[in-house]
Figure (tube, protein in one colour):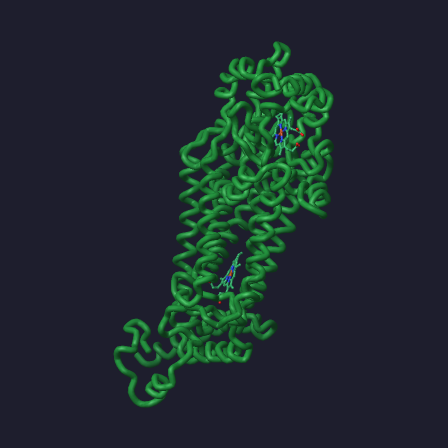
Length: 272
Length: 267
Ligand code: HEM
């Protein structure tokens, strides 16, 4: 750690050096800044053109960079992919790693908070004058680790498998067989398969796990009853405090009951 | 040739004085011209180059966002029944609308990337150290606000992707400890995500956060001017470097060995 006196002396030297041996901002630095500004605007316009000219007016037509828009928002459907913008992918993927309820908070709130605190603490922890990378091994290794893990998580989030409704629907007969579902559970099973549930939940090995949501293969094993399932689907956080699962009250009572019957009938392979 | 030349010369001087009059008027009453002159002609370290353009690149992206955002606000309707249709109208029908919306959308990503790159360069150069700690903290605030701006803007097109991502995002907020549920309620503006939520996100996205960003950027740039930018740590001419006394005498004294002079620096 360098003393404040040393650091002040260094800054005084800096000011003097700049005054005596610096170069004027205009035109030298201004030249670089202007070129860079032009590059930035050109890249933005370039991306826009690729995006626009490879897509059509059709909602969801992905082109090279993603669609112009998806279908209009509809709280009453459940076939959706909850996907944030790319710079939140690393968080999004963290949610798949952690498990509800023990450690999800760690992923959703804990890790972002820790990252921000680290950034805030940095200039107060590292108080040496030394700026050469070869003399700052800890800082360099820590930064490399953070960058590498963010990059991996972002990549994983970007390529994470999404549930495809048609594939899941094709699985329904197998579910009925393996989980020995009664006939009245079939409409609910189809609803479940064709909807967004499998973007967070796993059922008999299918679907994608996110937000630490539980495997629903044996959702009915606790025998809490159809009414409980309906209450939970309507407002998950009312039944399981702190639940990040969205509420599905907008589906309407009939569909909710079908789903609930299906869930309650799922006792796991072998009938639970 | 003498007389006409002198007359032309006098006329030019008059024209120049007329042109400068408003500038002088402003300068006398505000000192702004002097400020701009200071900004342009202040010295910066002789060894800075491309790495130090990332901050102004981020500023450029921010300006693109501000300009395109104002245009979008003229056509966008923050109402669940109209938002999606107004986005479709802007993208497909409005003249140049696709360009404006596309630049706003992709500009946001470019802005975030540039923030990270700029932060990375500040980190690698050790430029967060004394006396620039405060400017680093302001930067952390800018990064956080930038990402919040992305989160709130994402809902506005009101399509399935943006809607459900926001549902999950707000639910995550609600699962946070202590203030989590309260903040989620404030964002949502009710039990369900609906017109209240959209209005709130819109106000936050186009007034609250941009205001905060502009204020912080102003402070940030003021500090950059006041403290100056850091030389690359590996530079042999880094401003503020420790001198070994022998080289120092050589510099002050009579000989400066040729090999020590950068061929481009002119010094
Ligand atoms: C809206 C966002 C931002 C804008 C417009 C901006 C702009 C600038 C500009 C123009 C400079 C001058 C030198 C350079 O370009 O590298 C600078 C320097 C600096 N920035 Fe930023 N910046 C932003 C965000 C950030 C962030 C996210 C951080 C870090 C957490 C940060 C920390 C710093 C520091 C410490 C300096 C001083 C660097 C030095 O002395 O070499 N800034 N910023």
